Image (cartoon, rainbow, N blue to C red; front, side, top):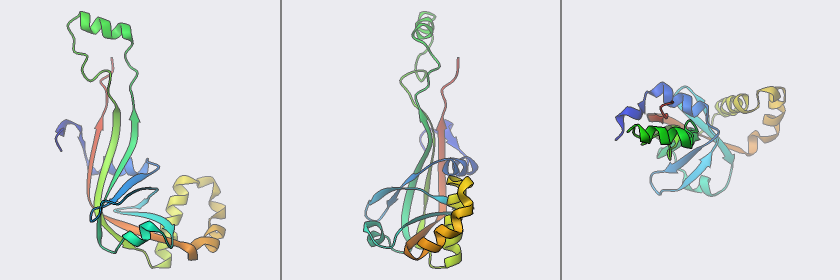
Length: 171
């Protein structure tokens, strides 16, 4: 990582993953990329999809993947035009205060595997639903009953997490 001052630890990276609606996964062997919603249990990420389709055709057990997550990305609005004029007038540096983006990100590398075990599939779907729809969990068993047989689940065993963040220094 070039900017060591923005580097964050593994727990920060896991927090980014847990607070992100989706990540973009790329298969390293062919560059195929797609946005997915993930659930996480410890050092394992899960996603689900239909039993057939392009992603299913491209994925093989043990493939190396990279997933990029961004949990925050916004333009800071801490400075007004007048405050910037004052900074310049007083010989201050405007660099990094405007025309920039604050962000929190994590990049995961690991290997992907098809989940065959029904209990593990249900567990992965349950932790995803608990995160996305906690008030609707009374309907989870009904949904599983209707869709489990037509739902494929993959898991990614996390080998490495690289996390970083940029925050604009406030006035």
